[in-house]
Amino acid sequence: MRIEELDPEPNTKAETYTAEDQRVAAQFGDGDGQFAVLWDTSSVDLGTGSNHTYGFELTVDETKNPPFSENQTLLTERVTLVEPSVSISADPGYTLAPWDGDQMQISGEANLLPGTTLNVRALHEDGTPPRLWQSDVGVSGDGTFGATFDFSNPDRPAEFPLWVQNYEEQTRTTVRLTAARASILFPSQVVKNDTVTVERVTLSRGGFLRLIVDNEALGTSGSLSQMTNGSVDIPLNTSLDGPTNVTATAIVDANGNGELDADDPAYEASGSPVAGTAVIEPETATEPNNTTATQTAAPTSMEVTLHVNDAEPIAPVANNNNSSGGFVPLSPVTTLVAVVAALLLAARRGPDRL
Image 1 (tube, rainbow, N blue to C red):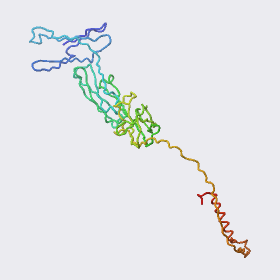
Image 2 (cartoon, rainbow, N blue to C red):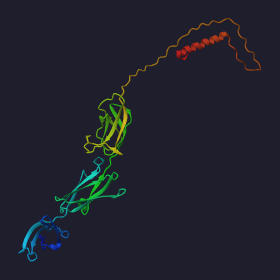
Image 3 (spheres, rainbow, N blue to C red):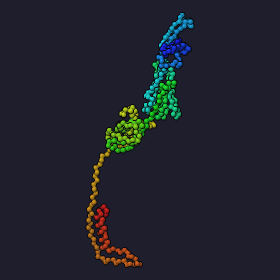
């Protein structure tokens, strides 16, 4: 076996490689002998002055192989050496949002010999505890390979590298496990101007708020950008007949197209949708103001007829012990006059104060 450089760089001698630089891997089938010649090219300088084309020749020396009567050339082949190339891609991508799940499919291509074993790995050094994912994969006949990683263990958000061992410069990339957080406060309320209000809205990735009654949409907000502790008014698409339990749910705009699609998922917290239920009452009509000024009734006159019997007046009380005087009892006439005065005063104050 002999390999010779066919296009050496200018002013250089063509390099030749003999069997000492090659290895034969033999495999025998049912009566058919098969073998492979492996050439270690790690010492070949792939400079820019040559296209690195080599001629491979397999010959038989009749002096060393008695079955042959003469020297023979059994095979000639032209080989071009190229730099080893390994590339990878990921599905659904190197960034996994919560709604993408935890599985990442790694697909790769290489110009390496079929059957070559590659080690695909990812390392999360900042995790508690640190975690290494790795998978040994073989290059297939068409130069492809693949691996699957489950990234369900790391707490989100997280970032860490992924690469193919020994080909890190060509394949190193970053895995990003993102988080999506949301919270809302949906208090019971009365519809106002055909809208209801969701308070203290936090959407880390933007999205929508949707109102549901008995699995039917009652109203949907417009596209919302990322927000923290905001307030959102949602118009209703139908009127309510009475107090109704309404559920408000925070929805992620998963594909970022600004539209609420059927496959846009709800934000989640601890595995449950971020939502709130409130009692919503229909908007009440404005009642007319029937208040009128209260008129004060005119005083009612009262006529009192007094019958007084003639009587002798009561003598004044004597001044005893040098006092400044005592109470003098009223005569019957004086008493009746006082009663009449009290009745007239009460009549002027109105019937409510009698």
